[in-house]
Image (cartoon, rainbow, N blue to C red; front, side, top):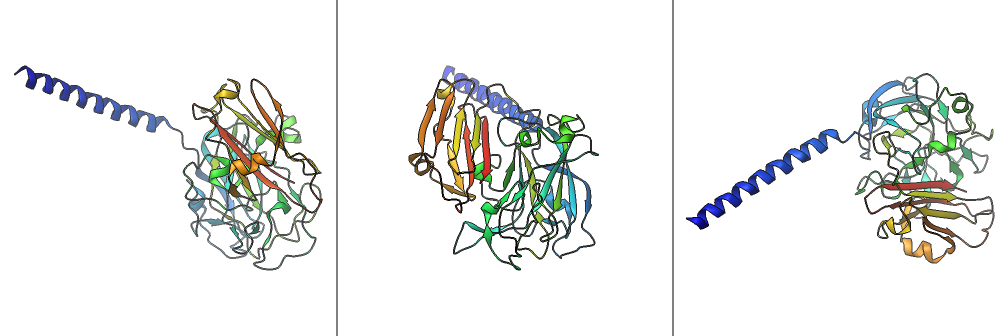
Length: 339
C-alpha cells in the first residue's frame, strides 16, 4: 500500500506541475506582445494604379510571402499601427517585408519594387528614413533584375524568408531592416515632433520609378511597372523588450568599401552566444566562418570584438550586408548597411 500511495502522490504532484506549467505558459503567451502590425491606420492605393492585390489587411501579422500582400498602387501609401511602441534600441529596430525575388542565374540581382519608409509618434508628423539610389539613371525596364546594392534606405529590395525559424533575427528573417538611429538628425526628430522612443505608426510610400527622388535628389529607378507589394512589418525593438544587458551589432561601410563590424555586450564578450553569429550578403545568408575568415580583428576588449575587411574594394563593387548576434539569454541585435 505504501508503494501505491507513493505512486499516487507522485502522480498527483506531476499533474499539479503540468497544470502549473500550462497556466504559466498561457500567462506568458498572453503577456507576449504582438511584434507585427496589428491595424491599418490608412491607405491610398491611387485607385488601384499599377495593378496588384489591394487588401491592406494582408499587411497585418507575420509576413508569409506569396500573393498575400497589399499593393500600394503607383505613388500610393499604407500606414500601419502596432500593439507596441517601437523604440530606438540596440541595432536595427524594424523589418519591412515586401515580396521581391532574386534572379535564378544571379542571386545577387533582385526584382525590386521599392518604397520609402516613414515613422511617426503622433500619427501626424512622419520622418522619412534617408534613402539613396546609386544605380544607372535609366529605366531598368519591366521585370528586369537590378543589383540590390543600388538601394539604401528603401524597402522592397531583399527577399523575405518565410521559413525563418526566428522572424526577429535580421539575417534569418530577410526583408529590409531599418535602424531608428538613422533618423536622429531629421528635423522632425530634433524639433521633438517625432519621438524615436515612442513610435506608433509606420507609413510606406511607393517610389515611382523615374519620378520620385531619394534623399540626395537622385531620381529613383526600379524595374517595376507596378507598385511595392507589402507583406508585413516586424518590430524588433519595442518598449517592452528593452534590456540593459542586450548585445549590439554596429556595422559601418565607408566609401572605399573597407567595412567594419563590431559585436559587443554590456555584460562582456563572453556573454555573446558563439553559435548565434550570422551574416548575409545581398540578402543571402552565408557561413559566418567564411566571412570572419576574410576579416581582421582590429580590436578585442572586455565588452566585444571589432572586425574589419582589411582593404579597400573597387569602386564598382557594391555591398549589401547584414550581421546579427544573440547573447546567452537570447537577447538579439542586428544591423544592415549598403555601400
